Image (cartoon, one colour):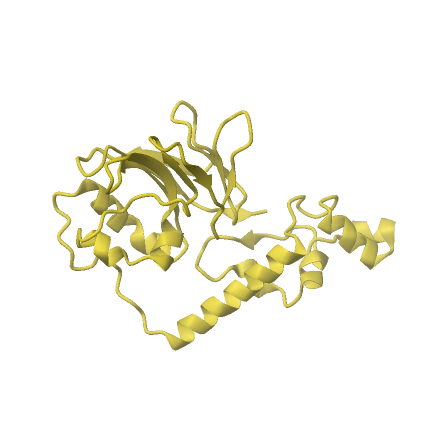
Length: 239
């Protein structure tokens, strides 16, 4: 137990909060202060208050989320032990005349090692000539897609219905999905918001407002797409 507990949510792929505690109860106990125990004198009740957000840092992980992150951290640890270090997808590619791909290449290593969370907005036409747009979790797509094909320009990176958001301007098909790194907050007055799952900071994608704490919005001037915007989000220590 302690009065000032800090967790590092963004230094690497292995979530340090999941490594710091063997069980969810240990995690709750870390946010119980000696003052709490003086007045409550009941550890189980103190844990319940932390879990409900009445004690601790007020933004406590739920048990299911902690267990999921614990499993993810263990999988990442085992993967590092069993898999050889892979080359970055952009290495050896000629990207001189492709500003958007250059921007992705510049960020790839930082995204892979967890130092940077990136959301990509793309507006363009699909293979049917239909205008589509959407927001893409770069880290998630890097893990689930073959980006060497994009950097080789054998395929074109486009939003999909499985990405953070997707809109087909002709069929009016719209979808949104949370990813391992971002929660989509669509039903609010401010429009689409993306909540980072590590530091709980919110990215506001509205170009007329500030994108949010620790986030920078970059418009990529390129002929590769109709419109490209990159949101760089640096996760910070959570007090």
